[in-house]
Image (cartoon, rainbow, N blue to C red; front, side, top):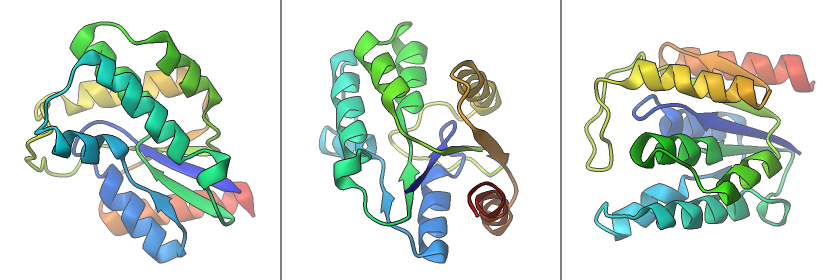
Length: 169
């Protein structure tokens, strides 16, 4: 089982690339739980909700819920950590423990070099490159294997596909 997670700042193409790659590779994928949760809450949440979001996303990507040789994940727990640090200045220690327990073989860090797409849940249209650097720092801190993708959707997919071939075949 190879798990690949798409991560990065808001409106950097994580969800679109995950769905595109899942179709092209004919692989199952896990969508971002936070988005559906926040849609149901009209975008309102409290810091305690972040732990709930992390636990549910973790559950959805755990062994019990994963089938096949390749599994793609739209947004993982580093997103919740950075979100918590940015909004609240701290992160629940349980979220940090879950990050270390994630079993992800490759993180795909999406560069925010695509146009900002407004969305009621997005709040950082002018701060994406700073946040991108923060994601990079977190991936390096945890020593998680990652690649950076940029360009068009097709370019990004080709970068992911090439890396899969290089690392896992």
